[in-house]
Structure formats: C-alpha cells, structure tokens
Image (tube, rainbow, N blue to C red; front, side, top):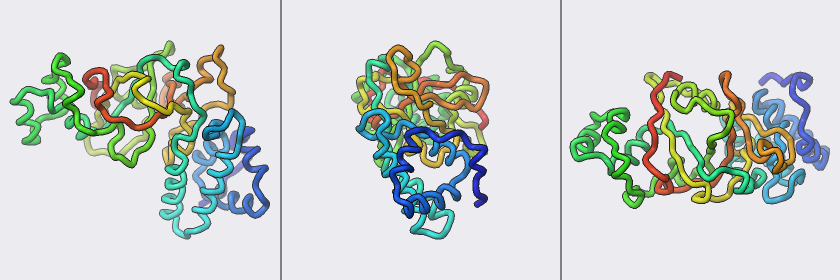
Length: 291
C-alpha cells in the first residue's frame, strides 16, 4: 500500500503524541510500519483520536498507547493484507467501549438507534401483527412496509420480545446511538438520515431500509465517546474533536458525526448492547432508500 503523505494529514492530537512519545524506539518503528499500511482515512482518524482513555481521566494516554502497540503487533505477525485487516479489526474489538465516559446527565432522557437489519426488525414486530399478517410473514410474502402498516402501537408489549439485541449477535459488545438535538435531522427521509448519520454504504441489489428504535437513556449502561476502536474498519467515522468535556458547552460532552451530505453533525455515543425489550414503543419505519 502506498505510504501516506503525512504533510496532508491533520495535526495529531495531544493524546496521540503523548502515547507515541512513551513508546520505545523499536515500538515506534513497528507502529510506523503499521501506519504506513493503514488506509489514509483510518490513519487520519487514528492520529486524531483524543478520547480513547479507558477508565482514566481526560488526557491520560495509557489506553491509546496499549491500543497502538496491539495494532502494531497484530500487523507484524501476518503477511497478507486480508490478515492485516482482520488483525486491525480484532484489535479494535478488544478496545471497544474504552472511550471517555459520558456523564448521563449530559444526555437527554431518550436515545435513538437506527437499524438497516430487515430480518431483525421483522422478527421484532411479528408477535404484534394480526394472524393474517403473521401467516404472510411465515410464508415470506410480507414486506417490511406492509408489516408496519399492520403494526398497532396499542398491542406493543415488551414482554413478548425475544432475546434479540439492539445490534444482532451476542458478540457485539457496544452499539452506536444518537438523540434529538437543536440542529435537527432529516428523520423522516431514510436516505438523508442515513447520510446524516454517515452510515457506511453497502452494495445492494435493492433498496436499504431504515428503522428507528427509541429507548430510555437510563435503560442502557456504559455511555462512552465513540473511538476508532468502536468504528473498526468503518472509514466514514470521525473522532470527536480534542476538547475536554465542559458542561457549559454541551457539544463537547459527546461525540459528533462527520455527515456524508449537507446535514449538521449528529450527536453520537456508544453504549453496551442490550435486548430489544428496552424499547419504549414499537420501532418506527423511516423508509427505504437506494444506497
């Protein structure tokens, strides 16, 4: 892979500088080899990271240092690019949920999560459909749009929901979430909302769906700033600016997206993956769009 032009990359964060400064000379060489291979956008994000501090205080670089060493070692142990990518993604998984803690009082009472997982959503709402629609779902002839037309909010009963999680798969430790904010968001247009949230583009032969989940902030735990480790190989992610959280400037107290369109940055955080039964009501079908 072509070496990046460091002169064109943003200045590294103070946290990154501190982490690198604490490395031994041989460790720096190994890290440089890894960073030379890393795609430019991921390298930009890595060098801009300022919130990967674990349970330490703001500005403490020990967790980021450990992450850099982990990435460099995984890279040095393999030869193929596919293995190197898996090694980086594995390193990220090991450091999920290690962003700076977000104080819950800096967040509103309700969080929003957006899903494109049609099978998961249909499985979630199927118990609340009338018998005719349930049979169509079993026969695989019920579209998600039609399923939501049959869905009655008054029938919503969280006790009927199975053990499905906000993010499918028990191996998923953390999930991204957002919330309502004064700058607003195109929440009634699936394509525009996906762009505002910088959802990674996925090749599809037919349109993507977008569904909104709503749940209490207090129903989930471990609220954190999203970091490069939470994003993994997702290059649309952007770390939060290096600004120490200040209650007088609420926008410094949580992460912010780098939108894919002309939309305002959306607030974002990660929290522990939880069962879908925490939803305060039925999910909302935003729409279908072409990625």
